[in-house]
Image 1 (cartoon, one colour):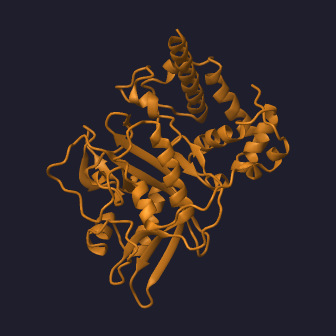
Image 2: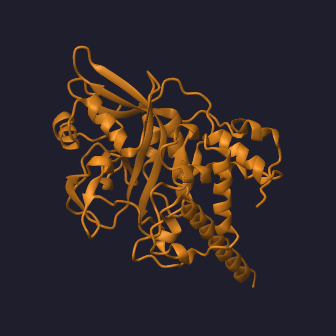
Image 3: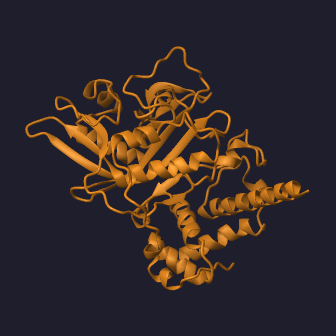
Length: 370
């Protein structure tokens, strides 16, 4: 399978290829407004807004953790990896969104809760390696707590899952949703999420206030001081999703088929994210570097290896697996209601999905022409 690119020199130093943009708006008002999706009226607007929010969070803001004491402790983290999950009735019904009650208000911290068999979240938080922390979005961001009564159960709900952060002071990388929560708990002096939220934070989960309380621990997203021109983050499929749910059908209209490989994961430093999500990272970097034309598979593999830190031989295997699906040697049927258990199978599924999507677009174009 051949892939081409115009400037072969950029393959030796792929980061030169990333486009630099203007300074990101770095005030709290800009982020608050961006998190409000109530005025959006089409599916096409969603990824554009995701891009905007990702840049605001990753390049214009930091997570600020405050713990009172003598002396007090203040730690800032930059965000290296995050994922978007949004359920907006009518045109963005992402079935992988938790849709928890706490996600009905934007701009708040939401710690993942244990779901029941029906998919409804319980009052208990996930523990062990299943922990996770989101910034809620979709509805207007307000410091007022969400109301339990009088709300449409099918209302807009969204969560931005923070997967990897880096302490600015010592550059320590904390990767993985559960490890990230462990870091927040440890630095806040809490033994559990319940203790953190109820006792330490006094149930104040609002994340966007610039006023940091001095008398109790807090976690806030605040503007970054040393903002500069930055490259666009890579956009990748989200981690841990497949088509194994028993309700999944092999149809372009099936919501799981539609959303399973959406590029809603954003990363800034692929070479640091080596423990989880390597195939998804590969897909995002592959898409970025194969946008141009004129290069062989071998040179493309070398470029991807340089950016991601994945061994070149492994990258070649990834390209081959993706090609099995893209070229129709494996159909999507193989992955419907089946757990994806290997990297090769996952990448072949991605290729098969892309092939099927291209076929649907081609048929629709022919129909419109008639």
